[in-house]
Image 1 (cartoon, rainbow, N blue to C red):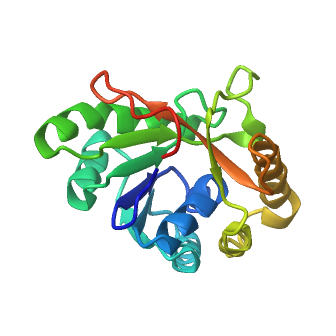
Image 2: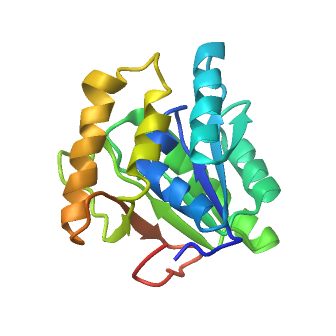
Image 3: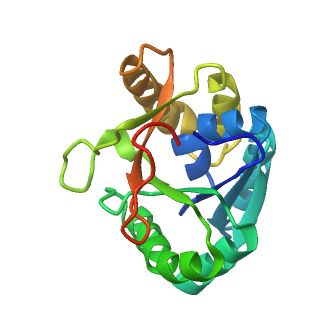
Length: 206
């Protein structure tokens, strides 16, 4: 599990991705006394401002990257030194999500060898839990975020330039209930552990 006083970093492609795919987990991390950092690339002034509001509502710090590249990702990892990192799956249906995931995987080996962080890495969910081939994304690790769900939705809705009410909001609701049913919870978020230098963390929890 993510423990108090640990650092959780979400490194994702778009300003609303952290809220959409891991907002409840971020809020839970902060509630339990840990630190959360959301790293996303700069977009425009409107979306950057929305990212700042969303992060504040979740209780997270915001790290706006100049670009999404292997070197930039490596710099973020070295500066933040996260215990836990969450990013997109490499088989995500969205091409920018896939590029983000590949940049993270390319940066990880050298950073972990030299800095020792992150200790654990996880892939998050994708659109309607489907990969680029139309198959359900395998996400065996489930985090109960029922208590944090209102906070997640508030943060997600702060991205008013995006189709939250008609598209992303209902999708988040459906996915939250889907994963929640897997552990008899009202809402949950789901993840999959990624090997770091051939090592996997424990099979349960973050």
